[in-house]
Length: 224
Length: 224
DNA sequence: TAGATTGTTAATCGATTAACAATC
DNA sequence: TAGATTGTTAATCGATTAACAATC
Image (tube, rainbow over all chains, first blue to last red; front, side, top):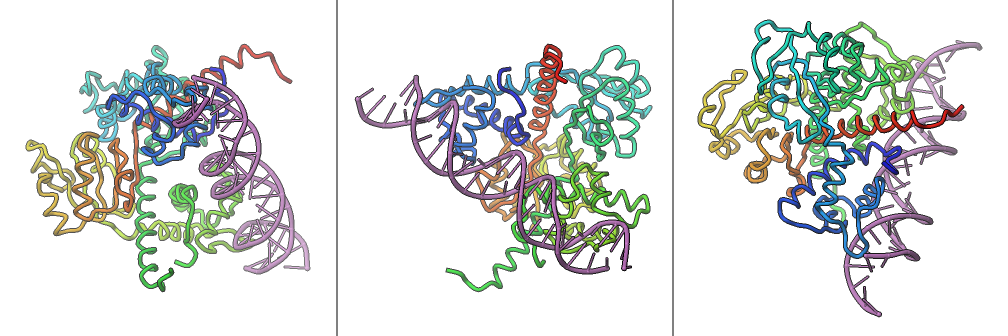
């Protein structure tokens, strides 16, 4: 609560990774770790680890290092994992189904409370004990339950209109799998994007770039 | 081919987004665009757009701007989308199935050529005309077909051993959905990670942080 | 030609790394 | 106490933004 101000996105992006590594150390019954050792394991500098952590408070002890358990707990707390925000899934296609069944929402701060789809054939089917609801009931559901987050797993074409409906209903947080930039149209909204197409294209670039580099290295005269 | 050297990851990450926006402009039959107008649409600075593009060559024209079609083509070329690298999917669980069916691989530079799973019940089933193959045949398949990329959609526990098998087979590029940092164990490997858990936790942080800020704003005295 | 807009250099800003005094 | 390792300040590095001459 104390510091916590204007933490850069770069730092925030590293938090889940710290959390994961600390969890793994816990599993291995390692109780104590220095920034130096964590640095070796994670392949980032010890300086960065200490800087990152000190954004949020003082968690270590000079001459000793960090308690793995305590630090893991702290980061979980910083991330807000215990909040159990209510989330609704929109779209029960391949991706929506997979995310719904695959993710351990409870371990990451959320509860999946409803799944919506407009396909009459899907309505009534169950995913993980949750019955698929008709998208037409979105408004009445939101009015009653005020979900914290909407997970968008709908085709791009459907996204803008759907986002507007959700926004009007008061949903201000989104986990967005659709290829539509929500945040361009609504500025008081929190959007975490998972752009799978972008990720795949970046991989394509990196492979292509690497290949070109290998070719140019071959033809290049040796440098001592 | 000319410049292309040591492009920062930040620039590369923006390329697919440029590509997407330019594609949308094409759909709207917009043929010409200035960095200023693109800047307005994408909510990034015109300076950054021009800097980014000039990493790869000279695509614009003073006083005119950029040809949407030509620029779209150029970025597609930079990304290497026409290469059609062969990719194999490992893991035909919920996520593997969804990715296999959901993605337009061909539009992003890849061809999905095989799907592997170790579950006897799944072997022989078809996803998108591709028959699920027994993971035991991974080595013989790689020996014969030399896939460019492996897509890892297996549980974390199975990942390190699987990665080693693939690496030994000569697979050096990965689209990694598993919660395992491949790149820590193999350093001559290209890995593009999709860490869904991390993404969800970042969302959790941002919601929590935003909530706290709202609370502190309420109790704060008004500032003119 | 005048206006527009690029490509590119220079200035600013922010993030990472190094260094070290504080302290367990 | 001596050794280890943090928290934190200062130095470096890189990325973003601003400015403007070049030019279509």
